[in-house]
Structure formats: C-alpha cells, structure tokens
Length: 216
Ligand SMILES: Nc1ncnc2c1ncn2[C@@H]1O[C@H](COP(=O)(O)OP(=O)(O)OP(=O)(O)O)[C@@H](O)[C@H]1O
Ligand SMILES: Nc1nc2c(ncn2[C@@H]2O[C@H](COP(=O)(O)O)[C@@H](O)[C@H]2O)c(=O)[nH]1
Image 1 (cartoon, rainbow, N blue to C red):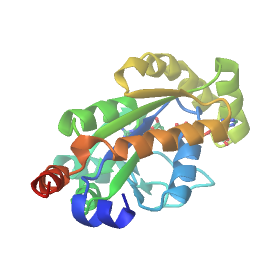
Image 2 (image 1 turned 180 degrees about the vertical axis):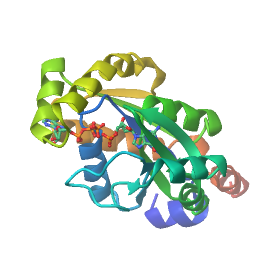
Image 3 (image 1 turned 180 degrees about the horizontal axis):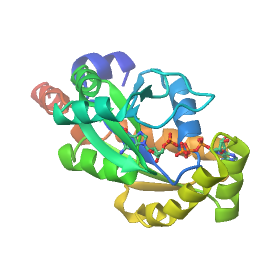
C-alpha cells in the first residue's frame, strides 16, 4: 500500500508512546534519538518543579516552574497526569497532547510509572508503554555518575528508588534491556512501527475493506 493511500484514505488515530525506566537507564537518550528519526512524533514537554540541570533548556527539555505554579496547573485540571518523583513534582500539560492527538499525531512521553498508569487508565486503547531496564545495577550507577549532572546525594536517592521502579516492569506492554544503545533504539522503532499499524488504530479500514468487497 502506498503511503498516500494509507494516510489519505485509511487514516489512523494518534497513539501515546510512553517510555519509563529507573533514573539513568537511558530513556531520555532514547527519546532524543526517536525524535531525531521520527519527526512526526511530538514530545510531550513536562512541567517540573525540579531545578534545571546545566545541559537543559527551559521549554525544550522541561518547563521549569515553581511549586505554586505547579499546584495551580494541577488544580485547574491542566495536567493529563502528574506525580511526585524523587522529591519533585512533574506533570504532562493536557492541551498540547490533546491538540496533537486530535490532529492524528503520535505523542512521546518520558514519564515515571505513576504517570504511565494514569495515562493508560485515561486512554487504554491509545497508549503503548515501554519499560527500559539497565543491563545491571553497577552499570546503572556508572551511567548516573558518568552523566555528572546530579549530586552524590541525588544519585544515591535515585538508586534507592530504582528498586520500587524496576518492580513495576510487568505493568508495561514491552520491556527492553538497554545494553547496546543502537540495538535498543532499533527495537524501540520496531515497536513503534508495528503499533502504528495495528488494525484497531486504522480508523478508515472498515469502510476501505467494505469498498473492496463491494467492488468484487
Ligand atoms: N545503552 C547505553 N550504553 C551506555 N550509556 C548509555 C546508554 N544509554 C544511555 N546511556 C548514558 O547513560 C546516562 C543516563 O542516560 P539518560 O539521561 O538517558 O537516562 P534517563 O533514564 O533518562 O535518566 P533520568 O530518569 O534521570 O532522566 C547518559 O549519560 C547516557 O548518555
Ligand atoms: N509522572 C511523570 N513523570 C515524569 C514527568 N516528566 C518526567 N518524569 C519522570 O521523572 C523522573 C525523573 O526525571 P529527571 O528528568 O528529573 O531525571 C523520570 O522517571 C522521568 O521519566 C511527568 O510529566 N510526569
């Protein structure tokens, strides 16, 4: 089938592609690779009360806001999901997500398991969730230390939280061990490609098939 036929005649609902992992396993890195190779994927830029890291740009990696602004957004129902993670608040602004989905665009989320479960509860048919595991705990520690963006105290807190986070692996549709980055990335793209083609996401398939049958 040509791309033209698939896009213009059959059509497809946008999906929400959710990545979670313990801190340092590599989901932000994979998110960046995916965005570079899949320009049609819209990244949901979260709001957070966490302090900005040296490498981060406000509005690109996160929108950095005060706790007061966060609570205000939450009270006004402007967050599709939110959670307290490692002592800071994070949330996914609802409006841009709804706009993208309505336009049939897929959205990429880098959120923790609490957020992943909230999003799945709200839109069970439109969420595809992937949990990223590190190849080992020493390697996870090594990645957090090598990233060199967090204090020793923050790293230790995140490693402690990893136990509870890794324990959620069964709640996800797919689980990938991020040992070799390029191989994990290839697998992630394969999941996205296959999920985009699921029968139930193709909104015009019924009438297309009816048309084929009528022409027989
Ligand atoms: N497969 C890999 N092999 C080696 N290093 C990796 C791999 N994947 C990611 N890294 C490196 O590990 C560090 C942590 O990765 P990243 O920041 O993507 O993790 P994260 O899961 O998003 O963490 P956080 O939840 O804290 O944001 C980075 O320095 C990144 O370059
Ligand atoms: N529930 C949500 N979790 C989020 C969101 N944005 C990020 N996160 C998760 O927080 C931790 C820590 O991230 P970091 O950038 O401070 O290292 C990580 O698990 C992210 O996936 C969000 O909007 N909602």
